[in-house]
Amino acid sequence: MMEAAILDIVRRSLEAGQRVEIEGLGVFRASEKGYRFDPETQPSVFLAYAVEDLPMVRRLADVFKDQGCSVWLDKDDLMPGQNWTRAIERAIADADAFVACFSPRSVTKRGMFQNELRYALACADQRPLDGVFLLPVRLEACAVPSQIAERVQYVDLFPDWERGVKRLARSIRRAARGRTGARFNSI
Image (cartoon, rainbow, N blue to C red; front, side, top):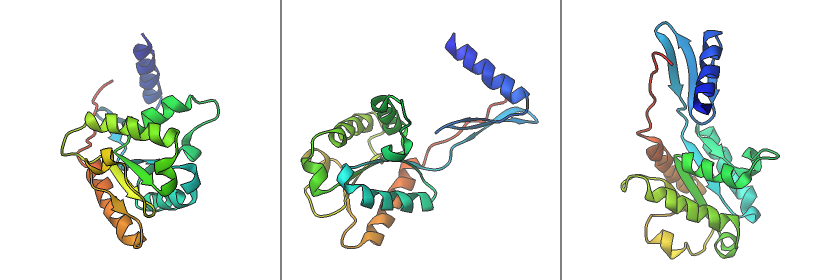
């Protein structure tokens, strides 16, 4: 019932000449053959971190944005009144890449960073085995939890920030590869 109502709203908007954007998915537009769907083409990146590392994580987010990525950062993307637990889980599940930012603070701290890591590991288990999703990043010298270090390669952003960021960007592009959009002739 709800799906039919949403479909009706989309159809009426398109018939009125409006485009319909669905965040994280893409844009529906009217075309000569009916309707067209243009998928979101920017790689989407979820950044997980300890709040004490926010300045360095914002720097990393800015680099990704400059390289054409859509970055999800809780401090910027959670809206007032939003169920933040569900929003975070949805953002992780929908992301092309989950970047886990490790530091001496994040590996020992209890809380959301640890929850996000566990949820990302569960999401990774549902993706193709040879796919790239979980990207562990060391912001500075620290131990990466063995459950992660035994499964995937991590990258260091020290002492050579530029080299580490380039390697990360290459992995993010690989994670986003294979995402394809569909063309809709009618709704």
